Image 1 (cartoon, rainbow, N blue to C red):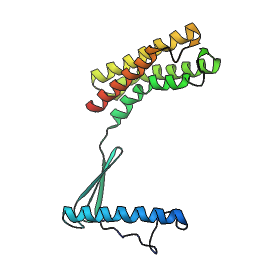
Image 2 (spheres, rainbow, N blue to C red; image 1 turned 135 degrees about the horizontal axis):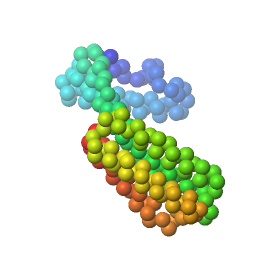
Image 3 (tube, rainbow, N blue to C red; image 1 turned 135 degrees about the vertical axis):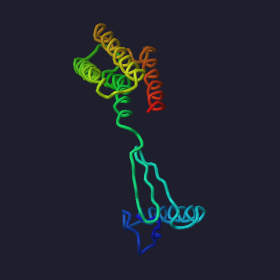
Image 4 (cartoon, rainbow, N blue to C red; image 1 turned 90 degrees about the vertical axis):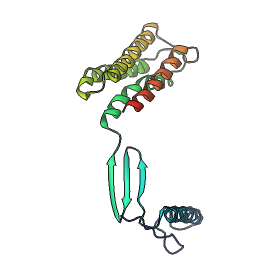
Length: 183
């Protein structure tokens, strides 16, 4: 793949929608984008200047008519971050229940989520994560389990008056940030 781009025109545009007023808006965007790419490449030294694109977990290098790509985020990161989603997932599971009595469906969802996490944490050693990340993930699962146990025991959901829940979600988000820095 070359960094050379064909400029979209009225007769040459491969982007949908191909007809109608939305097509004109879309073509206008692609013309502006194409102009920006051309200007950027000119500033970099011409059509064959190397271009690096980072998209999600992958970095793409376009250079000399060739395209290379490589994953830059290791699987370990994704395995580690899965646990940081647990507290927020539990919070989301509580939302349909609303305030008040714990409904059977909500209890079942909480139990399933926490049981799945407990099974997953038992296999975390296979991921060969750094000890600190493993400890953080075990802590997330343990605190989440205690949280679910408290809700099931009380048979009540108190969303608006539960600073502990918000604190747990904030703590999980902070731990996720630490995981990303270590990955």
